[in-house]
Length: 387
Ligand SMILES: Cc1cc2nc3c(=O)[nH]c(=O)nc-3n(C[C@H](O)[C@H](O)[C@H](O)COP(=O)(O)OP(=O)(O)OC[C@H]3O[C@@H](n4cnc5c(N)ncnc54)[C@H](O)[C@@H]3O)c2cc1C
Image (cartoon, rainbow, N blue to C red; front, side):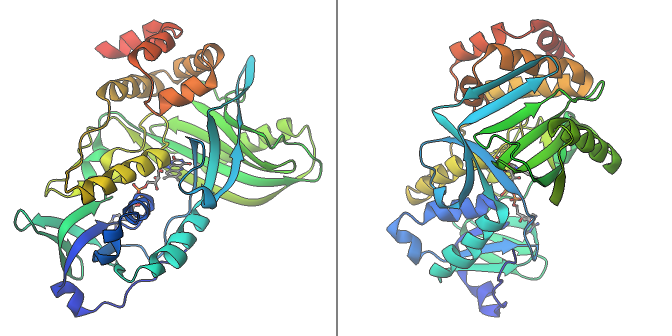
């Protein structure tokens, strides 16, 4: 999906904006979406600065309760989740949640061709943000490759360089096939969140399946590791898995997708060095141990929008104990991936899936977390507290 950039007008440089958003990706669109609900929105001069001509295509999956604010963009939903390990398989209803997916193409098509054109007060320019300077308590200057812009409030979704140098850092990397079969093979009411039955030795890898209909599915081979793997590994794992799963039935690959999500233990701040308000991945809204961020970014955008109109700075909402749990889990995956696979097996065997989803959204109480940890092997976690 192409961004429609404003033809640069020198007047923009002299103009003072009410809001500048650095980056025109997911969290920026969610912020605009949530800001619109206040009647003052139409009076605000808003500038979005995006460096790429075209956004990177992704599909966002997340779980939510009831109708979602972006329900009109959801193309598929599932009410059941399956988990499988070598000798164990469970499939459970996940109420009160629904697992849904939004295609990146639909998301950006809506924002760039429907939502933003309704508001002439929003301008998108193509430029690269190089830095932000605080000019006074009221004004900031956003310095870009080609021009600079002045604004009262700046939001930024640009991730700090230091994030990629975090001492505990790994990638969630994946390759997926959108396949079609002649026979009706898939149960379109159940998505597979993790299937470890095909896992490589000493590795943390699994297969993720989104069945869109009884003969169409996305089958994705995913691994968590410090290095990205050679293309041939994804291909041979996908081939092996698909031919087992389909029991030799014929299939055709309609399209492929590949991606990587950084996962790190890093102390994100809510404000950047020049007082800009951080959003999305830059504000730590992508969970370090799972790579999910969409729903947390949407909730954060709603909070930031109401803070904006109340003239309040963002408050720290992240619960530190979840950062600690993520850190231990990332260390186990890096140091002993097979132990991490066993922990996930026990987690899904002993804890109902809706409770795991609640835990992954960091909405559980300390008591619920104690119940979860009691059912997991303690030694791998205790060892990582001390090294
Ligand atoms: C491949 C992939 C799949 C994912 N799938 C899921 C999923 O299924 N579910 C889920 O919950 N989460 C998922 N995530 C995690 C998260 O939801 C996404 O990464 C999400 O896009 C993060 O939003 P963001 O706004 O922080 O970053 P982005 O969407 O990446 O937006 C940042 C924007 O800033 C621009 N930019 C960067 N630097 C500059 C600069 N200097 N100047 C100007 N512009 C700049 C970039 O070009 C980009 O458009 C996925 C992540 C990836 C990478």
